[in-house]
Image (tube, rainbow, N blue to C red; front, side, top):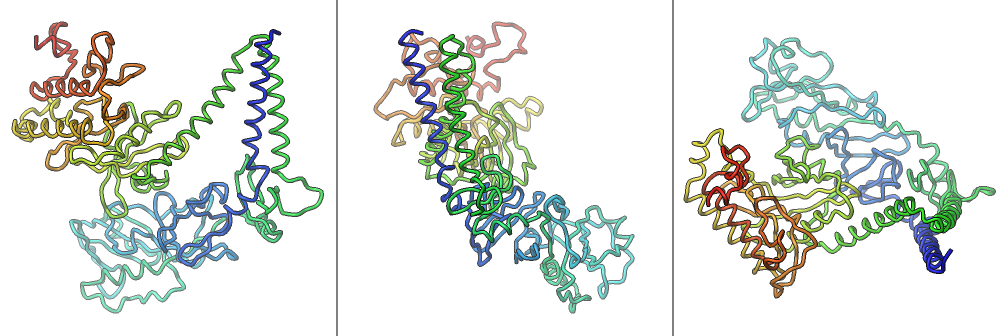
Amino acid sequence: MDLTMSCSSLSLLFFLISLQIHFLAPAASAFPLFQECAPSNCGGQEVSYPFRLDKQPTYCGHPGYELDCDGDSLTLSIESLEYRVIHMNTSTQILVVVRMNLSEDICLETYNETTLDLNLFNYTSNDLNSTLFYNCDSRPNLTLPTSPPYRFSCPNSKDGYFVPGDNLPKPLLSTCSSIVHVPISKSEPLGFPPPSMDGNNNPTISEILNERFEITWILNTSQCESCNKSGGRCGYGWAGQEFCCFCPEGVNSTTCGRPGKQRVGVKIGIGMAASGVGIGITLIIMLSFRKKRVIRIIMALIKHRSEQFDGEMKIEGLVSSRRYTYKDIKRMTNSFKEKLGEGGYGCVYKGKLRDDQFVAVKLLKKLKGNAEEFFNEVASISRTSHINVVNLLGFCFEGRKRALVYEFMPNGSLEKFIFNRSNTLEVDQQLSWDTMYQISLGIAHGLEYLHRGCNTRILHFDIKPHNILLDANYHPKISDFGLAKICPREESIVSLLGARGTVGYIAPELIIRNIGGVSHKSDVYSYGMMVLEMISKRKNIEVTVAHTSEIYFPYWVH
């Protein structure tokens, strides 16, 4: 074995051992885990295992028992519905909840059943079934309004009926198109029949539905009780363990302070240290025989871990945009119900924030490496504020789950108007020449702002109709900054490792490097190609033409 190979091998061994020591830090000092998983408080209610607040680490609670604290309101999501938690009784394992979308108005936009994940929750004997009927074609032959069912009305829909109990009138089953079952509590005074049913019965029905109901969690918590009695705090899923007991001095598998039992953290630490040394010795032997395949795999894993850490560091600096959890993303999109579009980057869904503002949520597909395009987009667009640049409202960076939350643009992208040949007349009526001119002018203003109006110069490198969004008044906004590059304003020429952009819109200097340097003028070239498409309503590259010389737009013009 030559000296160079030996030195390389020893360097790699020391690097791996130091890496193992770095990873072992959480195991060697479990006190932070004990602190992180302390019972939390929201609105005067204590939250503890199996539940956890969404701001706590995942290992502080059992999967499926995550709660959201919004001010003084504690909420639980089950099967895409949200429930406000009124009371939590840990001794009886009972939650008193109410459906949030029925807490103010019985008129629903979507008719979702009240269903539980029966692996986690169940109803109690104190619950009474009730049913809401919507969109009833004709008034059934029933005694009204002094006995059930009680009629109500909703804007822009037909009559609806509320029926407490299990006796459902057959006429309603045949004349109403939508049915929603909602439990209510037997123990509360429901006041049937309601005292006032003289045509204004909606508030009374809402009050009945807000009487709340009970659910019980099924998880066996006997292990947790033993852990709590020994002075520990319960957790799940830390370091590959299912249940674990976080103690002030370490991590145990059951309880704290039991003699003769080694701590789980110590066991894991010894195992990881031994495996680290073993890996190092194995790598030295393999290096001696110049077998590098396994080494490349290991180094790739180390690189991936480093890239994830770098990603977190990059995100931490982006304080101008709100960071959402993946649970927030699912909530605002109603579990990705309405898709607006799809591309190579992923899918875009329509969503709504808590203040009823509509948004467009771009859910990115699994990205390679450190997801440079994601960080580019968040970093560049977070620096902008212009009427012709789309507004980024927030983002999600949670492991491999990454999403961008933008303002909602009702008219979508420009390309669907200028390339729509199925209904040319309709497109011409919507986009007059004056409108097309104003759109092109707005895009130019947006590009001028990116190139000259920001503290740093932002080069977009992907200007095309697909990335121009139109609001309700057809005002354009530049979007999709995945390929953007941020550079100092005084620099006119930028360096790139490779060409970036979309074929047909890429400036020649991005491909042929000996004809000139890459600068903001590359965006101007893409803008010019797009304007030509807007004028001719012909795609830059059209493969369905009669002659091959007409495929590429500039050749066709020439």
